Length: 382
Ligand SMILES: [Fe+2]
Ligand SMILES: [Fe+2]
Image (tube, rainbow, N blue to C red):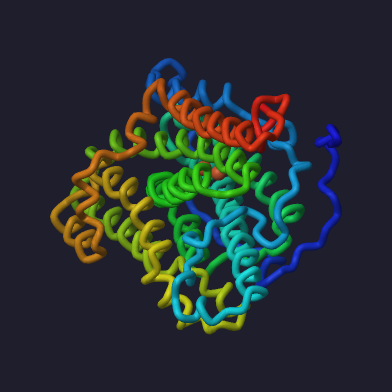
């Protein structure tokens, strides 16, 4: 095992599908706000800011990039994660095609995360300019670095372990376009922190316990720890801001949030991937929407998003009606599983969970007779 992880990743050209090369240009609008009040502080935001400063990690150092990923299933995705598994189409596929679905599902999913990390980098840069409160500007500066580290790490993961990359999915592209065009700072926070970040938190939370590859689980654990802070930030700033708004202004936000929810619920189904694999985008997307894996993705997403919408005050009868049509209103009665992240416990809770997962990894390895890694972890170095 080599120890030099600071150099460039090994040269390996990934298979590129769709518009993975090039750029997307979106005109922006907004007002840059300087804040001269350096003495009024929001203690909760300052706590998150401090955690953001203290809990930076470096993917080069924290993870063991020498880990060998299975080329036929680089993330160790259990078949229950595949959106067409269990369908008659899946049953007809020969083993080689199933391997291709596993590899492309990993490539498509991690490509969408990579693009979302870069989007978050742009969106929080905009929020730092336009949000009025200084403590909020300070926090998003830490988030900017988080998202840069995430983008770097996902890019390295795709290049060195997965080997397949995709362009940005159309459902995310139209959402990102709307967010960047909108001048009002809270729209980026609403769609970015409350909805897209929760999608990341839901996905990484699931992955860090259910992926079969220990490196992938460790990777997801590190990213989830940061995303929990980002989600907490959105909830804190918006639940203070939205009570100040008039009903007509709230209505606009509710419509925007509902549209973003519909888009992730119905359109985030891997259309481009199924097209590229040649299985029929329409047929596979329909199978994906009905699949237990997508149902679980929606459950994990809306069990976080709906309580958050209620908490920030976007829960009028018209909003509840919209959520009911989507079939997710029931989640509003649940406690947000991450609600405790908005206080001092934010990262500690995630740390404890991560530690527990790692401990299970270590014990499982020991039972198999394998040597316990010197660092005390399997996929990670810390
Ligand atoms: Fe991120
Ligand atoms: Fe984030």
